[in-house]
Length: 103
Image 1 (cartoon, helix red, strand yellow):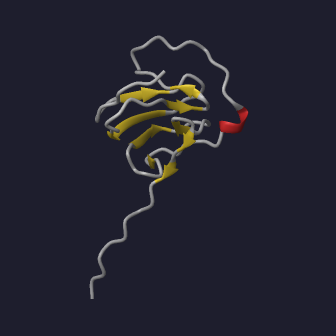
Image 2: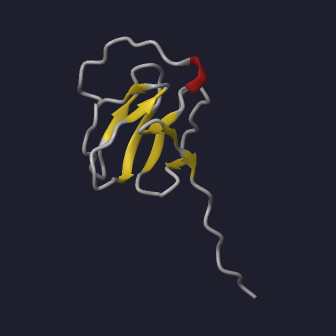
Image 3: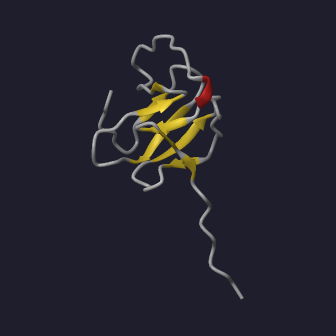
């Protein structure tokens, strides 16, 4: 189910305890999943779903997740066992930006 996301939107997983906040949203509609199951807003009724065992790599609290093109950026607010994916492609932990050298 493709959805248009917006910055500040909160999402929760239907298969584990993962919760994220959208920091940067893509301009087009897309599908965000955790463990292979679409994520939903916290106030939406969540039906129990079966996760794909191949997509259970886990999420880490406080980490930012991005796709390869960096069209979406998510902040993990609650860790879980599912893997975040955008349109079927797993999201990566965003690398820390190096600070400028101070001599």
